[in-house]
Image (cartoon, rainbow over the protein chains, first blue to last red):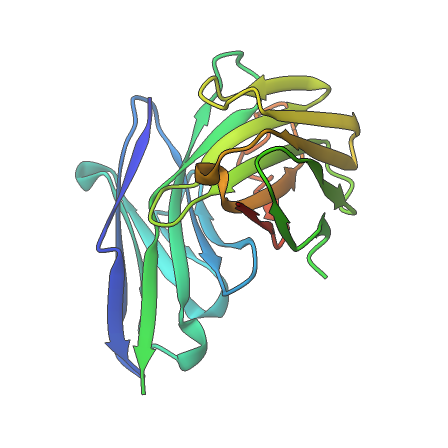
Length: 117
Length: 119
């Protein structure tokens, strides 16, 4: 079974500072990796995804993540935080179901990002 | 407008009540999901309907019963719930491409959820 670990359930940064949200995964096969964001009172929306190819993936709102196989990591970064980035962020890894049909996403526990003025 | 609509947004029910959550997707997807989101816990996949096949998490209690009458509609029927069932219930959809419903070109699209409180 695959798993995802997000280090730090809460991260605070100042506006304009670097955002770094950590994600490590375990997988017996090459994974598909995702970052989702959840704003208050909303569902999750996709920020970016890694499938194959280039290991540095760019997403919406200036976020990017780098797949590092040797470190089994997929950390999310943004060079300069904005107040509107305050939200909960979820890392997820894709695995195939036991029936071989629909893949199931395994989510991390989430990291709440606070941006300080 | 997220493309995935969930109703109601909020629901308070007693342990002896029977209620249903509704989800409708307008994205033309062919796979739909129910997730449970509890505070400080990872999202828990409850049920998946993909190409008319149902996959379920064996740890979900029988007091939760899904129904998927067509590819655009998904229900979660609730009966004799417990207080620990209070959570945010999220519906999602995706396009099953044969590579898996959550293959590289078919991310999940979520609704805004139903906040359920069991008293």
